[in-house]
Every structure is written in structure tokens, then in C-alpha cells.
Length: 91
Image 1 (cartoon, one colour):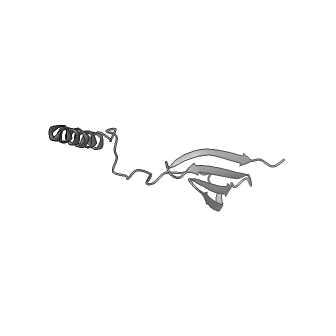
Image 2: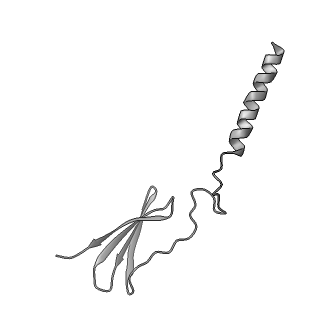
Image 3: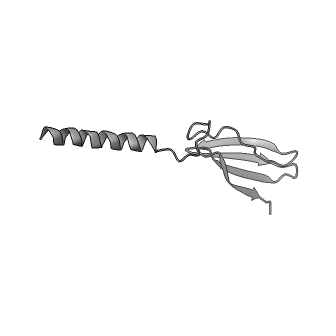
């Protein structure tokens, strides 16, 4: 009975160690998970940032171009990716 307990504990600890040591996918970077660092956002020349808004994992950047057209840019701030753009054309 004692031998079975020892073998059982050994199997449990070996499984835990295996899963912890192989949990990475080999593509780890210097940036912690969930932090994207710095990204470049292309906006037209002469555009002005009107406002920024955060909502959960999303950020909204509202700009007005030199031509007067307003653009909304939406970002996923957890991944650091631009999700989409909306150009609000008058008329």
C-alpha cells in the first residue's frame, strides 16, 4: 500500500513538472504576455487627434484629416493590433 502511494505521488509530481516545463510554445519574446510594447499608427498628414476612448480591451482613436473627414480607428489593446477604421464621409 505504501509503495502505491509513493508511486502515485511520483507520477503526480512528474506530470506537474512536465506540464510546467513544456507550457511555452517556443515563441516567447522579451515582452510579457498581454503587453504589446509600441506600435506605429499611420494617420494622414495634417490630421488632428480629436479624442481617445478606452472600453475594456478596445481603444478608439478619433481623428480629423486636413480634408475635414473624420476617421475612427479601433485597436485591440491587449494584442496591440488595429482592428479596423471607419471613415465618416459627409453627405
